[in-house]
Length: 463
Ligand SMILES: Cc1cc2nc3c(=O)[nH]c(=O)nc-3n(C[C@H](O)[C@H](O)[C@H](O)COP(=O)(O)OP(=O)(O)OC[C@H]3O[C@@H](n4cnc5c(N)ncnc54)[C@H](O)[C@@H]3O)c2cc1C
Image (cartoon, rainbow, N blue to C red; front, side, top):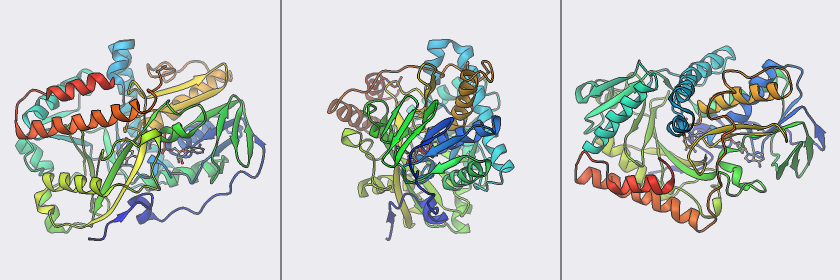
């Protein structure tokens, strides 16, 4: 079978790679310089320019806008945010409920702006369906569902086996939870449309311009330095390659496969007419979507991390990972055993040491950053961007504190990751343990979460 491996992602294979913008021509100045042209950087440029059209904003992107996770992800625009439970412990339940409410609103906000800016990103608001297919997963699913209700999601549903199958016929699924706060989208179409929208507002974007160092009021590149009172780092999974940031956020890999387009007969056997995004309750969880052109795109962890915080080579993934993802696909949908896998790819996302997403503006230096979304960044990047806008406006005296600047993830501090080889051993040990726990839960069914997984959670600082 001919599976394309890499080439950034299937989304670019279907869309075509963008025509590159000009690199930085030499030293320059701006009011705000944004490093990284993914969702975080572009949304930040968008909202800042909309709020204050007089601002001179420059985006510096090492390759092209959407080269990173924003052009490679699973297209789950959903309301999950990494670290909410920890923020509840640190700042109280009500603060975390406000954060969750802001995330629920963010899904609607992305859909709204995409429509307003004529960005056709194949958005379909079918919600998110997460299934359980072992007793231990069922127990976790019920606990997860109850927790989400406590965080104010009154419109979430819990389904038994029959109602789950009414939506999507996942083999062996015993239950599921569904939230309307989610949509399926085409990641590269969103990021491409966003870059065009931002540029048409008057933001300057330079591509093929790697920033080698960020310091107060300076973004340094091989072609010149951009000076600005505010320098915002929006480099998520690539942050480790910046000087001084090797241990800030760990670049975690996520890999995906996409099937060939499936026939109407196959679709009528699968259901999935609501085009919900689909996930599970495994420790090493999977995520999937039904694409606009009727394929299944499915992702999971694969090899979790490369030694020394290296990132990938234009999206290539390991053959063993492709096999592992195909195995999940066929376990979920046995009728797809012979189906072609057209494309496989991978990308990196940023994981902080305490697994909590953050957005920060250091008022003494003018340095800001957002990220560490741990795989839930499609919507979160938008909330981060609106928050960075408010923080910059507050700092420059254009506004006071807002509902967003007082959310509990703002200005959260976290320690760095351990040096190698501890980082590599820790992450690989954790995922090997998760996979073993998933196997145990499948083969020796008990409603108890495997002890191994609980231990891995505690050791990794995840829960
Ligand atoms: C395979 C995969 C599947 C995912 N699926 C989902 C999903 O379904 N739902 C979800 O919510 N989240 C998902 N995520 C996570 C989500 O995609 C990211 O959290 C989100 O896209 C992060 O956006 P960002 O702009 O912060 O980072 P990125 O999109 O990674 O953008 C960072 C940009 O900065 C540029 N850059 C890096 N270093 C420099 C430098 N030194 N100088 C200049 N430019 C630089 C990069 O080239 C890149 O374009 C997934 C991630 C991956 C990898």
